[in-house]
Image (tube, rainbow over all chains, first blue to last red; front, top):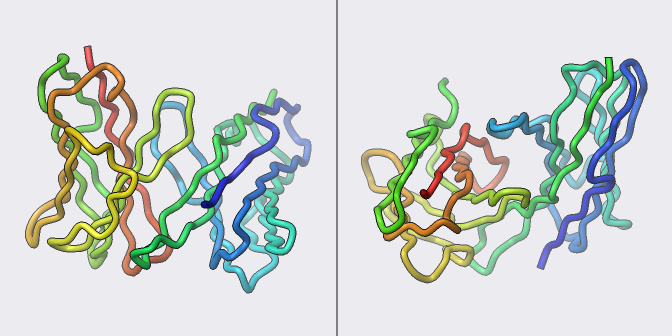
Length: 115
Length: 112
């Protein structure tokens, strides 16, 4: 059974700083891993999907890495902005007995960027 | 190509009433997932459906909850005789195959 942990639960940093969010998962037999952003009272926005064959995936100021052997992923945000304030969720798939992949989510890191 | 659509966005029900949540997947997507996010908790998988078939309902409560994805029309998550503990955000996701999932904006259910 897949379990996903995200540390820290909350993080506040001044605008302009670079920061790293951490995600760990217990079942390393995954095909991919996704990072999402969730704004208060809103839905999920997919940020990055890393395939198991990749080590990194980049989109703008975001860079996600995946290390299956250690069961870890990190999301790096460069030059943070107040608009980056949100909850960031990591999700690892779990292959079910029926062949589908259902996502197991961490409880998220609530990020606040201080202007 | 419109994204995953869910309606209503907000739903208020009294205890004992029925709640019906709808999800229209992205065009061309035949796989639908439902997740629930309880207050201050992470999202939890509920059910996975393909057209006209429930494939994996291992995350669904055994009673009062049901889901369908008919040949025509949206997927429906139905909660009968709602209780306060059902208050949550319910998210639907779709995918073209069992792969990257695209999420809708969610339906926030409040049971009074």
